[in-house]
Length: 139
Image: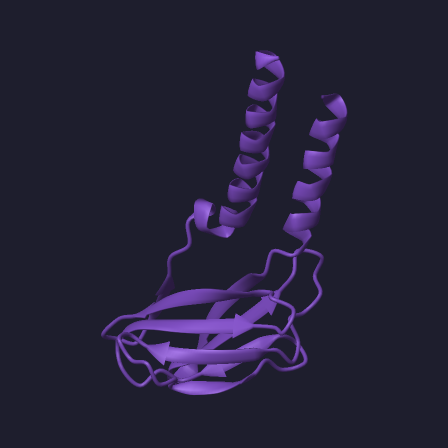
């Protein structure tokens, strides 16, 4: 059982290494800059992105992140904006940005949202272990 616990810890560390993080900044003239990176500091470089206004299906802007993993755009109105970044190997995230009347930015990300996949993975592993334990106890 101790070995299984060590395997779970190892897998959680591996999963966290693939967690895509970001930082958000605003500059003069309402320029929004989002930098995407992994926990080890490596940049999410040259990956695809799409920016959507709230309720719209056609992207406001599309492109690729630059060499430093950055996306830059200038919102033209207030409301919720969604920035989707993704790579061909499945990494990616959606960032929701709220632009208020003065065109200032805010973002909301809960701790659960950031580690959602880790929580789900650990839950599945523990559920499988529980089911296996039930079948072993019945015998």
